[in-house]
Length: 164
Length: 269
Image 1 (cartoon, rainbow over the protein chains, first blue to last red):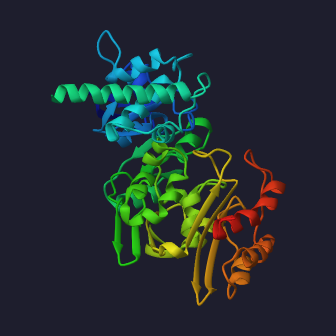
Image 2: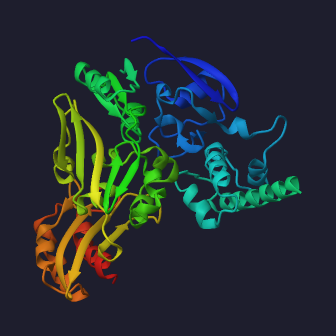
Image 3: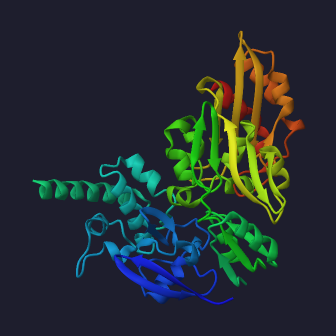
């Protein structure tokens, strides 16, 4: 069967890719679009390293054949990273020593991005639930939970200043 | 190796593709099927995605609930009309997986997964299925046991929403979130005049599929819903269960704790 053209809006940029049947979204992002911030981990949905935001929801890009998300809006860790700097969530991870080997970070950042977009003032329990499907073997999770909480507070502050 | 992934927008087209292909599978949320495809030689050649079939959505008429097959667990958990069943959904996997996983897909999850199937079994849900010969309905008990034919597609689930006082759900896990069941108990128990009038109790983690425990149910009817009678009834679980060993618990352990968790689910202690 022939390959197919899939159109995606990735981090605000329209992209057209040719995919062989069943090519996963993580493969499209990493191998075709060279967005290697999204990590390939377990390939079965249990580690969370490949998490991206598709149409506003955090999902596992390793479990999505690209054909099924034709015309979707995809945000990856590159999409929340300002040119030449770091976004508030990323800064909080660095400052809070919530990044060690770094492999889980992009997945954590994307589920946290989806969480804060929906709930700008998440409790620790909310954060714990949101990242419960993302494995980190370095930090013991607490620095990550604190960092997400700190970043959410900073983002609320920034929003308030912008509103004033 | 896959040579075709179809995303049809018409149910008949989906059924035709499924019937006409060599080794096809239905792709809904993908959280069960894609791990297989990513990590094993499945022999599948064709995937038929249900994504554009317009099978998602929840309608409630009186107490009768109809849920489209591809409704995500996330959408199920957010529907205020189904708030009573929210703890079931929230006990399953993690938010990103619930954003993908479909309600009907949960019926086909291997034990000790499939907690929603356990709840639907306790609720005597009906499954609506489309196939080459037309539509049919089957009780969820039959579907969890036999599945559906390779050329059929589950389109919806229906059940009566229980009232708050008669619904019980408890899932015991090794962690508080995102873990499979050691034992999962879902039950609808109606009490009238101080005694149990009817009981439907379903278990996960107790056998090769979600199962009912008719021996326990029968022993409970006519008795008060208290610790003493629930303990006595729960002791009869072995006739209906086939506890197994996996990474979460041993068969021995499950055998020891199944009656404990039935009691805790129904009377809290």
